[in-house]
Image (cartoon, rainbow, N blue to C red):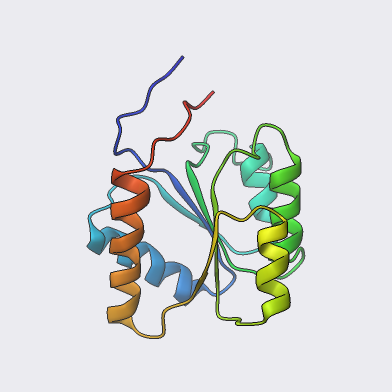
Amino acid sequence: MKTDPPNRLDILIIENDPAVARLTKEAFKEAGLMDALVAVPDGDKALAYLRREDGYADQPQPNLIFLDLHLPKKSGLEVLAEIKANPTLSITPVVVVSGSADPNEIRKAYELHASCYVRKPNDLGQFIAFAKGCYEFWGKNVVFPAKE
C-alpha cells in the first residue's frame, strides 16, 4: 500500500469560472502548496476526472475536493451526491466553496455529507488568507486514508 508524505496534498478544484479557478490555484501556491492542483470546469468533467475516464486516467486521485455549487451540465449538488454515493470516492473530503448564502443550498450540501461549506472570499487578500488557512488545516493537520 502506497503511503504519501504527510504534507502531500492533491487537490481537485471544480469551478466553472476560469478566473476563479486560476485565482484559487495561485492562492494555494502563495500559501505554500506546490503539489497537484487540478481544475475542471463542470460537473461532467469532475466526475470523469474522479472516475479516471476521458483522458484523466493518469491523474492522481485527489485527497481533497473544492466544489462550486453553480456548475454547468451537472450542478455541484449533483456532483456531491454522486461522489458520496460512490464507495471509493465517498471518503474524499469535499469542501463546498460557493458565493451563495442560500440556507437551503447550505442545508442540502451538509445533508449530502459535504465536509464543510465556505463562502467564496471577495478579494485577493481574503482569497489568499482562505487558501493559507485551508493549507494549514488540510495540508498539515489532517490525516488522510492511504490512496489505493
